[in-house]
Length: 270
Image (tube, rainbow, N blue to C red; front, side, top):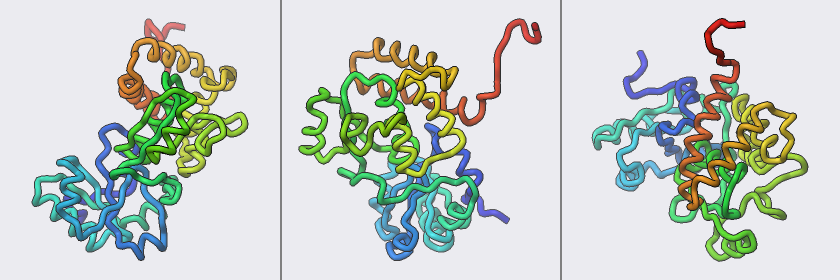
């Protein structure tokens, strides 16, 4: 019989990338993690010995805890968290079960930039349109839900990155940018090993809209129109980003679940 605070890999896989996904915590010991240094998308590491620190970091949010095999560490921590009024579950089979499940993406830990005060810090050009909203969405939903983003003048991006230990993206001559005919969103899918059917479908639309190759995707013109409208609606880049996250949440659900659905009225009319 499954434990009441247990979640399976297929169940968790359906939650990954959604705005209401639980917080994911890896509490495996360092030697175990070093043997297989990959993270479930959106997960952060925390020592299993620091219960108070983990409680503070979770701030009351639902979470899923995992260790390498899903046995004593994750089951014990999830049980302790529940005594502190945090709805915690443990992943059945742990990281190994996720690793062995077909289609479950894993992020190389080395690919994630250094965290500043517990979160990654990114910087790009101000007045975002497509890639500079899509990439933060991908990072927030699949890499680091607590990531911060700085929008500055194009000429100052690299200087701000150097001064504040931020990671520059979507500017020329940087690692996280366009490569050939592919955009920064594609680069992030490559480097974070996040190629899934839904994200690849979404990437096709983003790339076509961002590089003005609308023939590659019939949805690209609509994405461009909505992105331009969003940028005109908000003067504050961070307010625009928050609104854009909701927009890309909807687009992701289309890419994952709804791309085959059409609409007509009256229903059934030829």
